[in-house]
Amino acid sequence: MANYVRFRRPDGSTGAGLLEGDSIAVIHTPFWQSTERTGETLSASRIQLLPPTEPRSIVCVGLNYSSHLQGRPMPDPPTLFFKPLSSIAGPGDAVVLPEGAGRVDPEGEIVIVIGRQVKGARSREDALAAVFGYTCGNDISAREWQRADGQWWRAKGSDTFGAFGPTIVTGLAHDTIELTTRINGEVAQHAFSSELIRDVPEIVRLVSAVMTLLPGDIIYTGTPGEPQQLKSGDVMEIEVSGAGVLRNVVA
Image 1 (cartoon, rainbow, N blue to C red):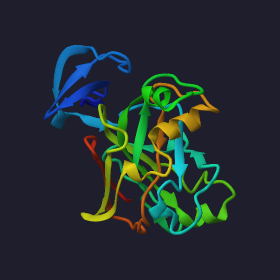
Image 2: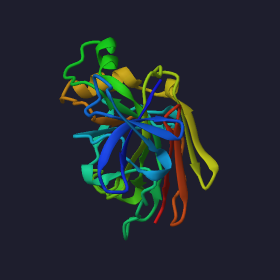
Image 3: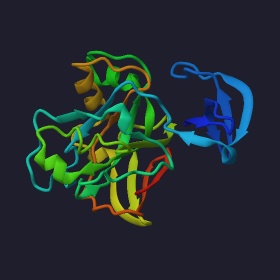
Image 4: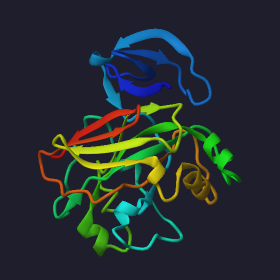
């Protein structure tokens, strides 16, 4: 198991590395197929962590836990949608509630990180072979806009509504990943990837059937339970097995 990060140094330059305790071993990029160390080591306390990948596409799966369906029928075909790149927020970034959005909820999620190009994965094995690792995600959602609009473009695509990070963890079994969401220190969501209606290889297979996924692309896998409403000042923490804790404050 390894933890990959992207970071910004105090001088403004950026890079990638392996998080090892309180240090970051800097590595050459791209690192998707081969991890090569540069020999430079940084103190984690002296750098700013960035979203751990720069995706070309952000795909999301909706209504993918029975606990979130709340008795509604499972969607068939599955509910898939995009988040714009402008929605990206990283570890420690403020999440801004847009004016007039009404109720806004957090949605803690396990996020798949693609590590090799894939189109038309024919089997579960082919789909899993394209997965580099996993990270924490928060699919922040404005519920009134979600219900009112024909598309979810502003409900889930507003600036800062696509938070993910802090690390990409590799080497996890796709069906044993634990997800926990805490709001102001209290557990608001908890689930395991084994509870996904459509699991990781099935999600990658479904998405790759119609679009090419490239290294660095990410897929939010869905949220469990019934999240609570956010208010300014709330501290959101999304934790995924081995990937650390994604912490953002609501502004």
